[in-house]
Length: 262
Length: 252
Image 1 (cartoon, chains in turn brown, yellow):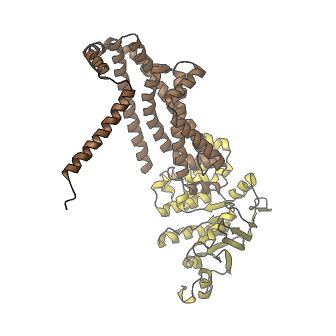
Image 2 (cartoon, chains in turn orange, blue):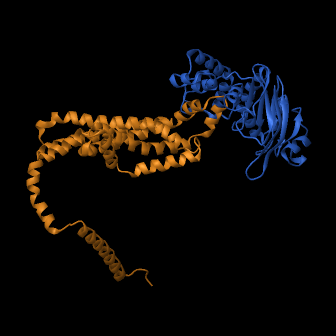
Image 3 (cartoon, helix red, strand yellow):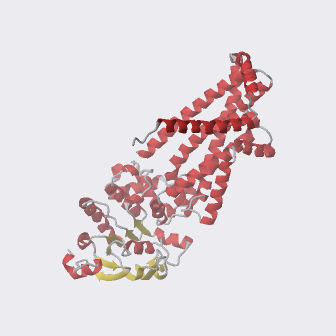
């Protein structure tokens, strides 16, 4: 008896593909996806391409300021998030605080991470109005959600023997935190904050488009005014910014983690 | 100098890990606490420095002003004041590995400096010079600027001793200072501890009796949370067998 049947393989593959197709068509129908819309959109493609390209090179110098504003927004949010993540992480660590504090902090951090940044921005816009400040608050807040949890985990993994040996010298609680704990978690906190900076640069472009200013706002405005080649120029600028942020963040992170090993 | 009086402690499972441990330590003594793993040696040391909660019993310690203060009942500032006077020598692995050797030594005096200063800049240049002297005492001066994590086990143990020396305590407590070391390093460490005991008593736990015989002035044997021997470091075979709970023929 050969444990293989060509006919059964054919049936199985057909059923598998049929299942996928059925689900896709059902979902697509709910999204109002129809062949006509597709045909219309594709028909306009050459015209669109002409409007978007070439980029409006003349506007390049006008992109510098919004790009810097986006970079500043992401940097400020990452640095603020990094600073605040440490006390939040302390409150989220089982070996530092009692469980009645740790549990609610962990739940809040989890809820905070589940909330998309765009929603958080909308809340801050209600409070502080449109502009980079609201964007920075939203990104700093969501950075704390991620960094606070990671710092909390790092603190729980930290060497308790080190803390105890300082306690035994008569050092106060905060001295033990500063000299025993901070050196253990600072490199990983800095590395995670650099990663978060990379994420924040991308996010700040998106958030810019819905009210946080910077290059995102520039893209949205150009589109709104039908200056598509200007929008392309802005997108090109943000691509360069994102790529640069990713490279710098990655290099610095590698160096930090290498230092930790020596 | 130090009085350990009837310490008892029961762990959640109901087992008595300390069952009336009592002994005292006077000036000039180098007391070795012997016993097998889990006998309660390290726990006794932790109780002396107030790092563990006890069911009953007291640790009394001659404070700077000459009065006997009770470590067991002390909390907060009073407890920290008592801890400042005791230099605990943990195994070298308790050092902060990412910081330099000299920084690790200076941490011995954290309890003496103002919290604000410890956040602003830490230690003074004068303290650094003193820390260098402490490192010189354990022959580690040339490595003062190294990152502690890059040292060997024996070197880290020396740094741990330098930290305790720099703390200028009135009593040294050493927890298994030679447990992770080869015989040559172990002997070198004991050669550092012994002279310290002439000025301020040293209480140290050990697994093995060979070196306590040569270096200690007295041995306290602990078995299952009880003191079963307290006397000369020259133990007979039957006394050793009693501490380790083995038959006489197996005792070295």
